[in-house]
Each structure stands twice: as C-alpha cells, then as structure tokens.
Amino acid sequence: MYSTSRQRRLTAVALTALAVAVSATACSSGSGSSAAEDSDGGTYTIWDPYPQFAKGSAWVKLLDDCGTEAGVKIKRTGFDTSDLANKTLLAAQQDNSPDVLIVDNPVVSTLADAGVLTTTDDNKLDTSKVDPNLLAAGQSGGKTYGTPIGANTLALYYNKDVLKEAGVDIASVKDWKSLTAALAKVKKAGKKGITFSAIGTEEGSFQFLPWFWGSGAQLTQLDSAQGVSALSLWKGWLDKGYAPNSVINNTQTTSWQEFASGDYAFAENGTWQLANAEKAGFDYGVLPIPGASGGNAAAPTGGEFVTLPVQGDTGRYATSQKLATCLTSTQNLYDTDTTLSYVAPTSEVQDKQVAANAALKPWVDAVKAAKGRTSDDLGTKYPKISEQMWKAVQSALSGSASPKDALAKAQSAAK
Image (cartoon, rainbow, N blue to C red):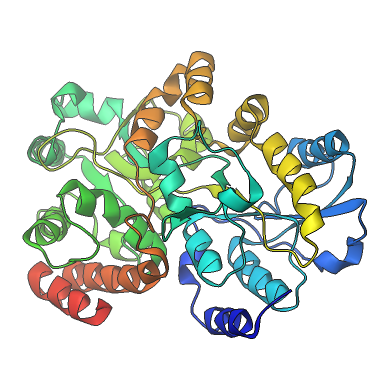
C-alpha cells in the first residue's frame, strides 16, 4: 500500500520535467494499456520502450518464453520512451504498476526517488556480473534499482578513404591535439572534418559529455577550466571550419546523414548506427573518443534497466524476479543485445559478442570507459544540469557568449 508521504512524492515527481527520459536513440510511438487489465495471479505485466517490436518479433517471443519458464502468461506493452516514464508515474499513483518495467537508464533515479521501484536488496536481483560503471546508472543514494539489459554509447566513426586522401594515419589520433591536427589536414585536402549533434536538447548534452568528461571536468562544476577547454575545443572547430555550423541544429540522425554523404572524415555517433554504417557505401572504422591528454574519454551510457516496481501485493515479487532474471541471463542478453545493437553489460557476454563480430571491439572498449549520466549520485539533479549544459553549448557555438561566460551562466543556473 502507499503512504500519504509517498503519494506526495509521486505527485511532485510527476510534475517535474522528464526531458532526460528521451535516450540517445528514438523509438516510434506505441499505444499503452493499463497494468490492471490483466492483474490476475496468472498474468504478469511487462512494460518496455521498444514499440518497434510487434507480436511475432524475437523480443516478444523472449518475453513469452520467460513467462512460460516462470509458469505465467505475459501481458506486454511497448511505449515510446518519453511516454513510458510518465505512464509509469501515473500507474504508481494508482497502485497499478507493471510487474516488470524496462526503462531508459537516466529515468531510474527519478522513479527511485519517487518511491516507484524496489531495490535489488528487496527484490534479490543478482547484479554481481554487471560491469560496475554500467550498474552505477541505476544506483541512487547507495542503493541499486535494477540491472542493465544492455548499453550503447558514443564513439567516432571515420571514413578511411577521406583520411587516406588527406594523409592521416588513424593510429596517430590519440588525444585532442592530434585529432585537431588530423582535421586540419582533412580540410587542407578539400574534405570536411567532423560532424556531431549540438542541438539544444538532451541529445546535445549527450554528445558533449565525452569531451566534457574527457577534459577531466565534473557535472557539479560546469564552469571549471577543464569544462571551458572542452567547449572551447568545439567552438574552435567551428571557427576554423573543421565542423559545420549545422551542428547547432543537428540531431544525431541528421548528423549521421551528413557523415553518410561520404564527405566527412569523422562523425560522433552511437552503436545504433552500425547497420547504417554497413550500408553507407564506403570503408569506415570506429575509434573510441579520445580524452584531452589521451586514453579513452568516458562517454555517456544509453540503454535500459530491467526494474521491478513496487506492488501492493508483495507476493508477486518472486515471480517478477524470475522474469527479470530470465531476461538478463547470459544467452538471452546475447540474443537481445544483438537485436538492439547494444553492448552487453557483462564481460562474459561482451567477449561472446566480439568473438562473433570483431567490429564490436572498439564499442566494447568505449562502453567499458562509459559513465551513466546520473552517476556520481547526481540522480534527479542531472536533468537540470543537462539543460544548462546544452544551453551553454548553444550559446557558445552560436557566438552569443564565450565558452567561459556561457558555462559560468550555466553553473549559476544549475545550482
């Protein structure tokens, strides 16, 4: 049952903006249904953000198979990612939550703060094999609220033909200085340098974060010297013509379309573009985003967590735990993450993925260096910080403020 204070928390959280609920990849809209429609003991409800997978798909078959294994029927509904967060909060207010909820990782801390989710201490989900940096995205206040089903992140795609024509050896690109030198060579050879998404939404923050973190900056101090150096890097690329002005309005999709033209040396984008990269018609490679002084920068993790929402009938938890465990078993993770173009959250399955497809190796390396947007116990503070970050990026790249002044304003507003 719900206490009055928990109801108040739910109402408060339901009224906050859930801009961060939109992950790095967009899904088409899906229609939802109430969890109460099939709330008898023999039917368990699962909500997920994969409306693109209809009945008959491998994903829906896996859900049904896990239900059969647990001795229950599954009522599954696929929602658009942003709809799912809001629908979940509403269902929780009505004591009508799904039994299993698969949700974008930055939303986990928001739902946990609202009292919607059970902890792994309560629900006994085993997370011992999960890479700690990926598990951190589902942790808040020292507690863990689920287990990742897979992760995606960002890296640099590069066009081998463009680099060869410009006389750039990709092995020489190890840090910001050598990357910028490569872009200068590419421009001199008459080609285009790098494209990315700096749009004034979560996508813009998502793409800026590897450079921000790669500088050594922390989200709690947006205007540090390191943070300013990251924004100055991007601004310098625009000023020198190494990146197009279109990045200010680019989504990750339009940025990819620019790279797919074959004119660009580099594009910052994610694992979800792998299928499109194969169709691009030119030889490409993938490089983890370099840190300012070398090494792999921490890129933000996309991907979802399998969580178990709070139920009025606590007797349902045991079966829900069986369903979640089935969905995240080694073989099922491998099959699911292959379908979703995700990197698995455990080293065991990552090794299996690379053995089957060597092209995934740089993505596994990038994911191992990746970081959750709500990590460092930022939790529900992240959306506000992120909004000020993308506003600062827009302001600096458009020339309306210097990187230093833009980030100083952002830090002041984010406090």
